[in-house]
Image 1 (tube, rainbow, N blue to C red):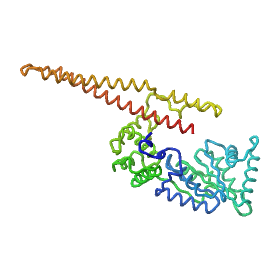
Image 2 (image 1 turned 135 degrees about the vertical axis):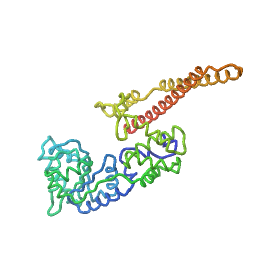
Image 3 (image 1 turned 90 degrees about the vertical axis):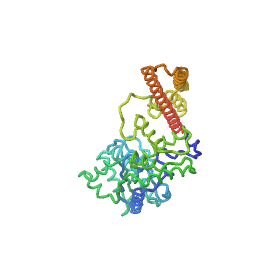
Image 4 (image 1 turned 60 degrees about the vertical axis):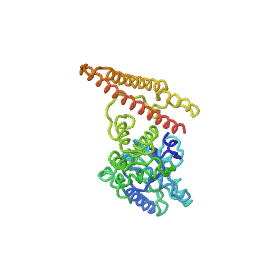
Length: 398
């Protein structure tokens, strides 16, 4: 929605990793240097850790985009809780090897044969394992054993491990991983961005989709954005996506700190999009991405998605009812003000005023104003969530 309003060519703050939007902050520049050094060695393990949303996957996607596929064959594995035997079969599948049955020896033989073929063709092999903190000790040991495959004195496989901070603690402290630890040739922990990097990061992502200065931003937006996000890229994307959406809904050409605080308040109350902590609330209507997906053929997907949107999105009747209630409250407030004004004009100066009635009327006006604010926030919040759900459903359909 906001990309059309501001004339952008795409979605600058999507949450999925995209090498097109890679931003080289200080910590990412250092990590890229370690990665380049590690890959130049052609052996062992390179370890990159960082908080959730720190940009590990985007960093690797940027690196892979610069690699010549004629010289390097890469396979990527995103792990869940796998044991030693399961990880071998997953790696075989990642390299495009089909193993009949569930025989570990056959899978290992197929992997070794594939690595030899690639080496004879002049290509090195790189295995990228994401979310490595989910792996068991036995699975990590199997990764180490794969690094033993050689052709003469040349190693056949190099492994890049990406994980959250708990993996860094595990590999540093576990006595069971001593042999793996000795084969790590480069390691780096991705920190959050610095306060001065937040504005260049936001403007870089906007420029990638054709931003020409509309909207503009108050300087306080970036300092307060850093405080709210901690400098974590994915949190920045999450917040700014909602901020740009609010700007489009209110047709703003300048984004200020008050709008940011409004978005932060909405996110704090939104169980679907928490920043860091989640306050208990009644369970809301689930968005399409949270609905269980039944097993179905590809040609049945559009029908399922249409049903999901219909269940999650508020209907036009709901919006019309909310707006009608708001209009009725405005009319009631205006009538009360007119009655008060007319009463003042026609009353004689000597007539005493019933202070209790005036106080009651003032209280009623304050209640109506509060209800108006609440209704407006509810309608705006519902509209924002509807747009996000529809955009999420379009990404799923694509």
